[in-house]
Length: 145
Image (cartoon, rainbow, N blue to C red):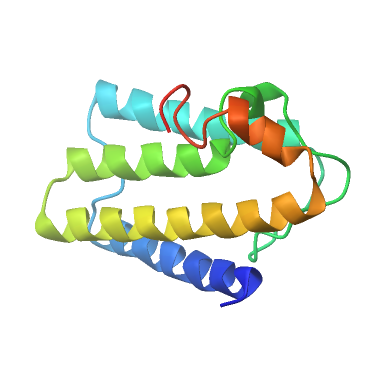
């Protein structure tokens, strides 16, 4: 399947998984620890968007022109926005444990992984220097994965 089409499909399912978490009151945390974690996830997403600049969002995860961004949170993880989404979602799932929230969290994680791999395929084709960047910076958790 085409990387852009696969990315669009994964985006749509990711949105549905998050809507499902909202609809089952399983997305938001309860109390200072989960609020702090979700606040940090929100701040990470904002930091990544500001660092990324005025480039537009693409549902297909199309790479944008303007050079490979490797500063700000991108110096620590290659996909800080996806890392923020995962932190926010899994904090909500942990705060609201149920089979439904677990299934929706797993679905959101799977769709995020599909988007990451599709995006990397597209970015590698546009930016040859991505290979070296990928060797030294982990995908979503600094120093781990």
